[in-house]
Image (cartoon, rainbow over all chains, first blue to last red; front, side):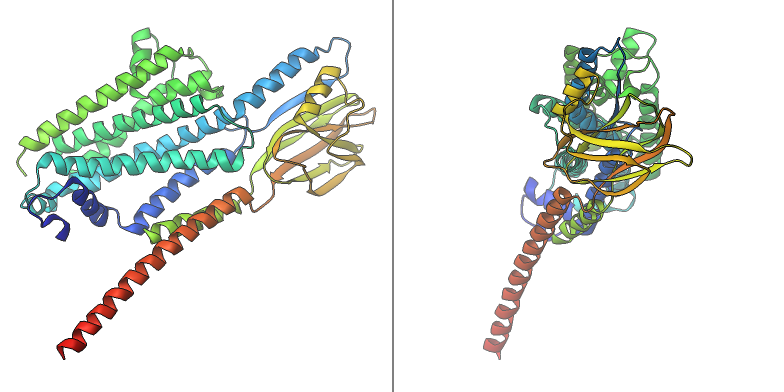
Amino acid sequence: MSKLRSNKPRYRDLILFEHDTSFPSPTLGLLVSVFLILGFAVVSTPGVMIPFSSDVYIESTPDWNGTIQVGIFENTTRDAPNNVYGAALFNEYYGVIFFSALLISFIFAQGYSNGQYRTVLSYPISRRKLLMAKISGIYLIVTISSNLSALFVLACYVPSSIEIGVLLIMSLSLWTSAALVVASCTLVAVVTKSAPLTTIISLGMWFVAFYNYTTPATTPILEGVKNLLIPLYAILRHTTSLRMFSYLQSIPTFTECILSIILAGVFSIILFVMSAFIFERTEI
Amino acid sequence: MHRSLYVVGIFIVILSFQPVTLAYRGSDVAEREYYGHWIQCTENPILYLQVREASSPVSVYLLQSADAEQALEMGSLGNITPEFELENVTSYYGPIEISKPGVYVIFVTTCSKIPSYYDLLIISSVPNMRAFIVALIVLCLGASFHIMKLSREGRITIRSSKANSTND
């Protein structure tokens, strides 16, 4: 609380206060470690999600076409880092959904019932700043941990190099996907003002969206909605050859992927503004 | 902060000692057939090979990706010099030395007229040095933050003790 005692606490003081109260040091370390384990699961289970190893077959027959085989081999080699990084991000996304919902419930929504907001808002702090400090902390922790874990897996277990453009666009799609998850969970929290309800609704909503994504869309509009909700999947289907994303589904073009990232970003900003609007006007 | 870095560092040390399965196959191979497993290695992998009972011996060749491409073009290993080879073996367990990290192909074949049934498992050796070095860096960072914190706390204690003695 000493950080908030100045006449007008700065945003940095609020962030530090949030860090001290909500993310004491070992908790933060454990969160990062769970993301590391999720990323590592990709390389420890070859064949399940990624072609970390694949088969090469030679049979000395007269109809042998070596050129085709070399082409397949070169493609596998080139795509491998994309596939590993993509699969790691895909695994991390489970963690992003799970931890965003839980952290927003127990760090943000619980503030209504345990009296934290009444105490904190007795200091000269605007509600918008408080919301920003809480939610940006959760968002940064979840995205930085998940992205660093995926990069760790790529750097430590894959000797081939990845194209920097592909790496950036895949990372950006994770950040926008996470922004949408965090913004929607925040909206649920400010509307329900209850930690258990936020957990149930947020987890239910995003896991339904998650599993729906693996089924093929019947109309182009539905396909667009799916890409908007989880832009990470759109970019994974475009840049990687992961089998589970390709079955029965059309592969989105690069323009569609970029559009879905932009729309998801805009949509999350709208959701966040709505949350701030409600948070400023509700009784605490 | 230092506690978080210690926790992350210890987790990475544990992960670096976790072996990774690079390839697995339990199947058969016939004469003039080469069955290959495309693997990515950052360290020397460990090969476990076991030919099943009543099956004839098999031969194993490890090739660099460029050599594997050449082998695929030709349709046979021809005059390619493998990085590592085992000829007519029924079982093997041990590390394979690779010259540099990269993409490799391990081919299995047999000289027997009857197909040979075998189980092949390739795992990474532990610790994964890249992960282990990252862990050491994180732990060192944690230790430096810890020392910085201790030295700051120490100064405060000295100051307060001096202040106490002046007051006395």
